[in-house]
Length: 92
Image (cartoon, rainbow, N blue to C red):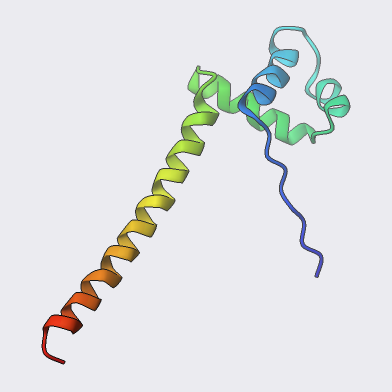
């Protein structure tokens, strides 16, 4: 099975790509092709910015996802630590 890697684009790249459509009058297809991205990707970025009304919406999503993952990791670590302490001090 071939594993493909997902490309990560910077916030600035996404915003500038959307500006080609919203400010410079290019169609989504015309803007996406030379940038090397699929038109549905650019359309999603455009919709996200339009719905949020902010350029920082991408950054907020990334930070939120990272915080959630970090909290899950801490929660698991805390649970393992509690179990270890209970085993150590419960006389087992």
